[in-house]
Image 1 (tube, one colour):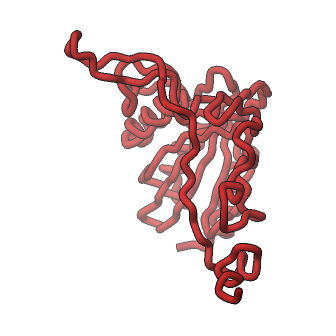
Image 2: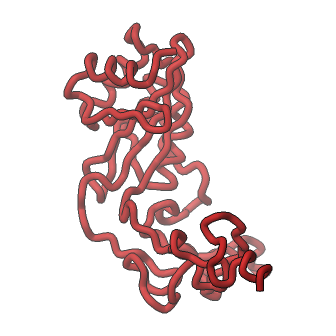
Length: 244
């Protein structure tokens, strides 16, 4: 098994500017391919002798909207009370309206939705992470790799179902996890946390029907006593209570 840096250099030498970048993180090589180059790059990763990535382990959808922002404050949180996790629930956070509101995402970057491919070379014992961003935030389209690795069939359907990423050339791009007639893509960051509708069984009709959401907005945050070095000696910590 080659060192990650050696594999990264080999990939950069082979593909050149067809890779937008390559790096090593947590002992694993990651590269980014443009949508127009994805099919050719993936085919060469599978067939080229130095690589031989003959197995596709997974295809993962990602929504990078508001990437790096977080409503939960953990670094400065205490170990007591509701304030340890999140601020005033009546105050909009990250563009959210109320606790379960819809996040307003208006900026179009061309780098909101991405498909991440996890590849394995059995022959060389290499692992590789390939990222490809869809260029259109409103209608994210990426070429399907089912013709290269048939195992991509169901993972691509899952990314389509949950994120709305359309895989061009997929032989049967249908929803795979949500219910029949489901509207929207529940892993998108602008999808409401309580959903749009809720199902219930109608006795008179003898079947399940959908109606408006009637869930009472509330945040359920279990109290957790953190007993580690970050909180020792702070007000309300277990150490202070023991000493007091």
